[in-house]
Structures are given as C-alpha cells and as structure tokens.
Image (cartoon, rainbow, N blue to C red):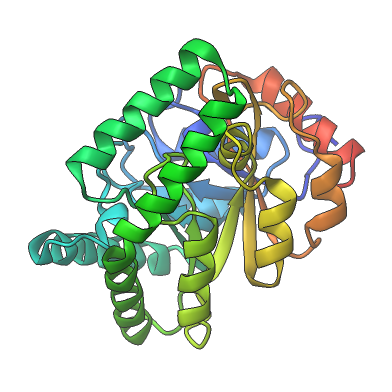
Amino acid sequence: MTQPGIPNEYSLSTSCYGTRLRTIEDQAFAAVAMGFRRLELGLSETPIPLNGFEETRRETGISVASMVCGCLNPRSEQMSGTRLGSLQEDLRERALISVRRHVAVAQQYGCPVVILRGCAVENDELEREAALLQRRQAEGGTTEDVAADIRNFVARAQKKGQRQVEHLCRSLHGLHQTFPEVQFALEPGVGFNDILNFEAMGWVLGDLARQRVGYWHDTGTIHLREGSGLPGQGDWLEAYGDRLQGIHLQDAAGEEAAMPPGLGEIDFRLMAESVPDEIEKVVEIAPRHGRAEILAAVQFLVDLSI
C-alpha cells in the first residue's frame, strides 16, 4: 500500500513538507508519488502560493479534502482563526475577514471542510499561570499534585473564557449564514488555557447543532492533554463521535507531538475501533520526518485498518 503509485485512502497535510518543497505543484506530485489522492492545506512557517494548482490537479487527479484556517498566512501564535472568540471586536472582525478569505480559496478548489483550531483565554494572569504550569510539568513530570493543579486551572480558565465561547458561537453562526454549504469543524488546542477544552467543546457543538459545525480530532494534541491528567482519546471520541468530521493522525510521546504514527505512545487500535471509515483521515506529522517515515506511517495505519 505504501509503494509509489499505489493509492492509499488517507489525506496528506502539506504541513508535512515544511520548506522542503516550495511549490504546490511539487507538493501535489510528491503526495501522488507516495500514493495519496487527497491533500489537506495545512499550517506552515512559510505558506506557499497556490498559483498553478488547477493545472496540477488536472494532471494528477489529486483533490483538496480539508483546509486548516490560517494556512494562507505564516504560522503564528495568534492565527486569525483562533481569534473568532476574541473579546475585542476589531480582532474578531479581522479574524472573520481572514476566515472568509480562507473559505473563498477552499471553495475555489472544491474543498468541503474548513478546520478552526482553539482560542486561548484572553487574560494575562491566566496566560502566565498556564506557562508556569507547563514549566512545572516539564521540569518535574506530571505528578498527582501537578495534574490536580492543571485540572483546577482548566476549570477556572473555562469559567473565565465563557464570554469568548459565546463570541465564538456568534462568529460561527454568522459564518454559516454566509457560507451554508461549507462544513466548519472545530479542533481543540493543546494549551491549558484554550477555551475549547473538553466541556466547552460540547457547549459550542450543542449551540451550533443546527449549523452542522463538526468536531475534528487530533490524536497528538489529545494525547498531550491526556498526559496532563485531562480527558483522553476515548473520552473525546465517545462524547463527540457523532459530530466527528475528520481526524489528524500523528503520534506523540512525552511532550513531543507530530510524530509518525507507530513511533510514539498512542494506542492507535482505539482509533481503529472508534473512528468511522467514512470520515477524513489526515496524516499530519512534523516536516523533520521525511518520505520514508511518511510511507512507514501509512503502512502502520493500513495494517491496523484505520
């Protein structure tokens, strides 16, 4: 299944390439050579221009299955998609403008899903406290005391971020009214002060049930959160599996994510048991891993029938 020219059933995120391939044409041809028939337009430190992609699509037959909002801009801590819940009206409006731009590009290439990632609570004190917790965890591991402090902090951040959750819901409601044919999917962030924690995700999906806003699972992010004493893979998939639109497949170990599946600590057999066949499955690993690692990851996933 992983030999050149033999197709597989996964999508490949363009974030896997980093700066190795600097044109969308090269990225598409490389993906096809590895057996992929679909791409996800993912995040990158230096986004590539999409000029010439139409001809490349005709030549290769590759399609765009999903887009991570922010992929048209250089990667930053404050990507436009994460500001849809901002307490500042001007930041929300700028975020909405950027999301509309991404949706326009998605529609141009027939991409059905736009993924929006989490949004940090806008509170300097909580931001400093989150950074302190991360340092404590990095230096001393996730002891019972550290895990308890993290859970307590997440509960307080959730309460403090309630207004941002409400703003996020309003922003998404407006986007759905403008683009009713587009599927938006929410993916939680890894930060302890992310407003899209386990409970808040349920609030947003419940509030936007009529707008069909979906859930996007990230195995690496959830593993890191689980390692901090927060809800794990099974909790998220059981709670939001009926709204699941897709999954980013990556491994993780310790504090490192975006590893090739099969090289870390994640039990991907759970994914095989819990993830429906029909959802989009995207291989998304760090660009330091090359072609051989991507092919080995695909073989690992195929062997598990994920």
